Image 1 (cartoon, rainbow, N blue to C red):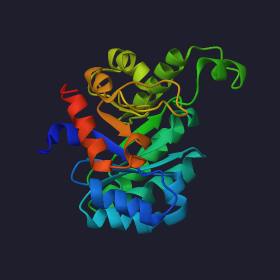
Image 2: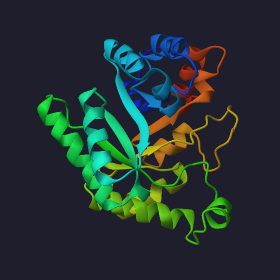
Image 3: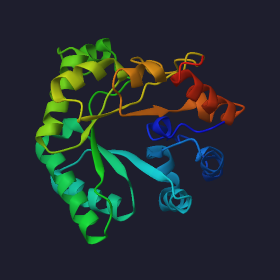
Image 4: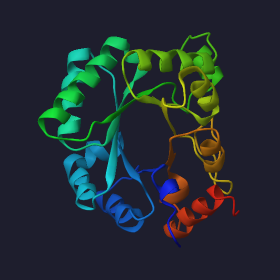
Length: 244
């Protein structure tokens, strides 16, 4: 299959696996198809720099998905170390506030300048895709609609100078309308037409998310748990290209 580079650069694969060997296999098999590999908390807490260095050795990009949320000084220092170790982009929780997000950017830019790294993308997590309207109201005691809260967080992220947000595909159009096409949106909650929904509530297909303006889409279990992973990723390419 000939790789469509415009599609490839938008694809982020979540390495949400238990062992280094599983992550290694996914990188080995899929790096020709994937623009960025996402290292989440599960993998990072288990294998940290080992998996980071393995991905870098493949000349592949990685997104450190650790969702920083702490006092500004701690977030600044953590952001510095993230960029020092070569992440192409990372994220923080928008609920940490504008001052915290500014600190993340400050630390990241200091590191990119000192270590001659490319200016990193910093994204703010808005509302997790596992959070429904019911959970937001009954468990988190917030009476806003999910979309209104996402937009509020996105505006705060832009005020803080961040590059964009992580948000469900259901809020994509609203974010782009309010904050402009240049404001980056990375969307989890992506499920191909043939995949199960799993535990996420606000989801859509890869093609629909990209058609709605997503800059990056996160692929997960539909690929990583597939018996034939190359077949799965090639089906996603075809779905996006409108051939399915």
